[in-house]
Length: 340
Image 1: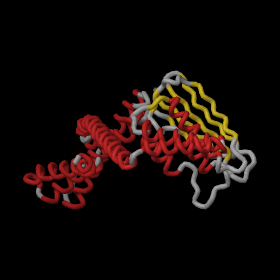
Image 2: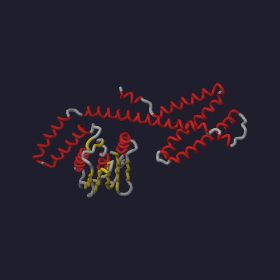
Image 3: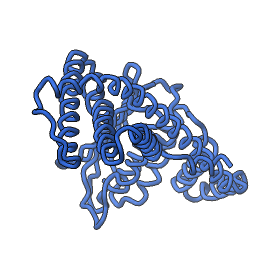
Image 4: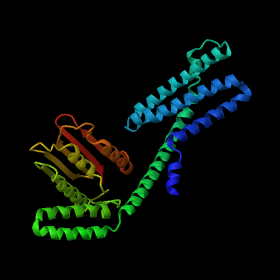
């Protein structure tokens, strides 16, 4: 029931369309008894459009460009100029439309007449702040519902996949001991595969895992991937962090997976890969760097993996993370910085 409710809930865009429709109808029917049909339509359109310009101009441009960057003086001046220009434009547009459609001759327009339309925009500016808070609230609510929906779906998928996992682990252990007698290196790979599968079953459903567990998972994955590389890969993995530090699972894996999918040239004798995971103050820094491989048709480094990771990071950290991808030159470099 909760999953269906989340899908049927109106989005932010639909909600705003409903609000503006209500505003438009409210203005129109309040003016209709006094001004008649045509004049009411003109006044409704002019007022609604001017309100939208003030509200969205503030919350989409002025507020993030000036106020959020702590440029308060520039923000105040910009708001004042913006309200004056918008008010004058609203007054001028209304006068021109009345003259054209209603054939009303109005006295020549001067500066003082147009400035008389400015004060009405001040209240709309104040409402734009309330409007912004409302949008932020519903956006957060929608993201929360999306996270819960994804978590429920992940738990459902996990339940479907957990068909006697311990039977599988026991079988792998039996195979490991048999192989170890004749081929110890291959037995070691089987052990790493078992550890990876155990991670998926036991650790990935959790909200957080120790960073040491995440690193062990990544190292096991890299060892298995090296089997497919003809000349191997030289991986330099720098680690400097508190092992007890906890992070969301599978947060770093996308970058490592991209290296072996898109950054390894199987014909190259030297595949150099650099990875660093460093704790610095209250942040965790993760960086990968590798030489570019000759791209195959339709092969795009990152792709949907990076897109999905970015969505997940926004859900987890809002705008408090830093993710950069640099594919200029011979190297492909990815950098992630998350708060702790």
